[in-house]
Image: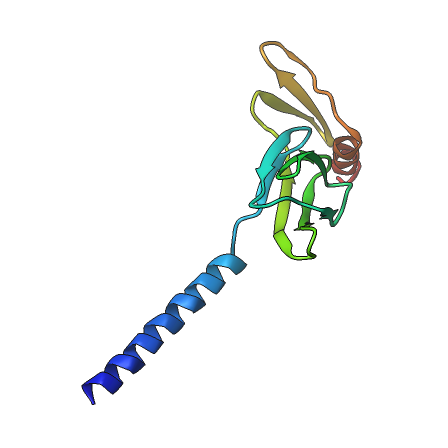
Amino acid sequence: MLRQVSVYLSSAILGMAVATLMVGAASAEPIMVEMNQARIVKLARAADTIIIGNPNIADASVQDASTLVLTGKGFGVTNMVVIDADGEVIVDEQIAVSRNTANTVRVYRRAQVQTLSCSPFCEGAYMNEAEQQAQSAQNFGH
């Protein structure tokens, strides 16, 4: 009887551990990349195919067989799937691209917004197409 209770208890603990691992994997944080910045991603094994859900948000380039360089191209969230030569998934992750707010100042004049880069002097910040669209939408959306 004691052995049977021990087996049930062990099974219950194992079940809870597996459930915890699955929840942890499902709620993993996305790979954070800043707009116009690169981030290195090391892979467990060599990649054969790289798929980016929305290439307007992020781009991936191959440095070598097990190193990728992610670049933030537009604001938002997309996903990346990396597959090896055998068709097995190596990585299936979300990528979140956001704005770098360090050393920047946003000036609001009524409904108009201007972003300045202040390092060390404040000047009009370079904006790629996605940033220009976001700022235009913000300026004309009010």
